[in-house]
Image 1 (cartoon, one colour):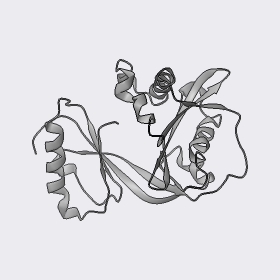
Image 2 (spheres, helix red, strand yellow):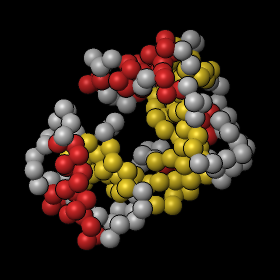
Image 3 (cartoon, one colour):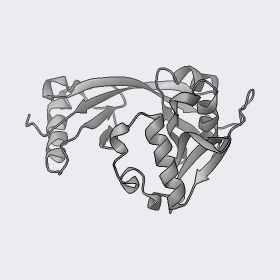
Length: 212
């Protein structure tokens, strides 16, 4: 999840062998043999012959600036700013996304509070009766708000809290357009919020340092 390559322009399918070699070579030099992802926003490449597995395809969605109309949800959403608040954010994130392998990882290796210093990234935690139930992130860059890590703990799903947390990140700057990658479950919710799909992103995964 945290080791990933983002392809930032449409590539010709013929470039797949060279790209795969560069990616594998890069991660082979690191100390970790864990999995890494390649996100092909235009889904033009076939990386399977080079040891990658097609993991999933996610819609890339955008929303024009503007306040919402319609239903809003009663959820206490707080921005995480301090070290302790970031630790709480990570705890909820790990539970919401089922990332059990990260429970033993130091918080700073998942989200380091120093990333908040520039003001571009905002991490939010939603609370019900004082208990944390979900997360979302707004990342402000190049005139766009990127919405990330919208998740709700299993026991509190299907109550509208994910949508509320998405709205909170989306409206962190109402004057800017927003973008996000949606799951199959989240896509109808985001469409209701005014997000539209502009591309289907192919996500490839590879584990280990095997040569190609």
